[in-house]
Length: 234
Ligand SMILES: [Ca+2]
Image (cartoon, rainbow, N blue to C red; front, top):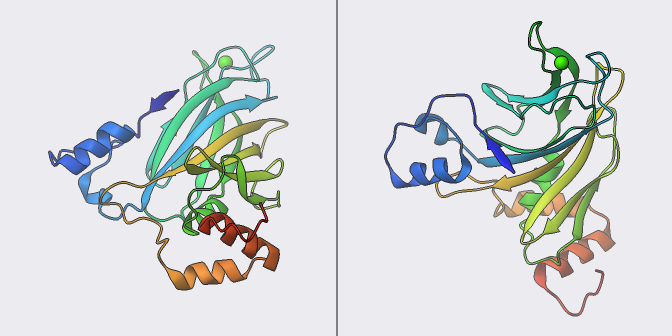
C-alpha cells in the first residue's frame, strides 16, 4: 500500500503531537486547521472495475478525491480499464457533512486528461456505526449493512464490519456521468491525541441511534458489545 499526500501547507509546528501525527498519517496540514479535526478518514482505493475507454482501446486511469480544500490522488495505472490502485488516501475530517467527491480521469501526455466518471462517498452510515462505541467483536462480524439508493452511489449492498480490532466499511460505487465503471473502496476512521473524536460517549445520541433499530438488532448488538454470555444472537 502506498500513501498519498494531502495537497496543502506543511505543519511548521515542532510539537510532539503534530509531528507524530504528520509522521503517522502522512497528512500535511497546518496546526490551525488541526484544532477542529474530529479525526482522519483513511480511504483505501482498491480498484476500478470496467472503467470507460478513453484512449484507442483502454485508458490510463487515476482517481482524485476532493473534500473542501483537500485534494488527493492515486497513482496512474497505464493501459487498463480494471486498475488495481491499492492506494491509501487520508482526509482530515472537521465536518462530516462536507461532501466527499471522487472523480476518475484518463491520464494523457499531450492533451488534457479526460474524465471517466464521478461519485460521492457517503460516510454518515459508517460514522454512525463508529459512534456506537462497539468493542471486542468477533472478527468478520457485520455491524451494519447499507443498501444502494438514488442518493448514495452504491452499486451493491455495502457492509460495515469489525475486522482485526477496528470497524471498516467496504463499498463499491457506481460512477455517474459516464457510460460505465465502478470503483471499490474501504473506509477506516482514525483518531489521534488532540482530535475531537466522534463523541461516542454521547449517551443521548447513542440511545437515539440504538432505539431506531429493531428489537432483535438491539439485543444482538448489546450482546456483542457487552460480551454477554446469556444473549446469543451472534
Ligand atoms: Ca490516456
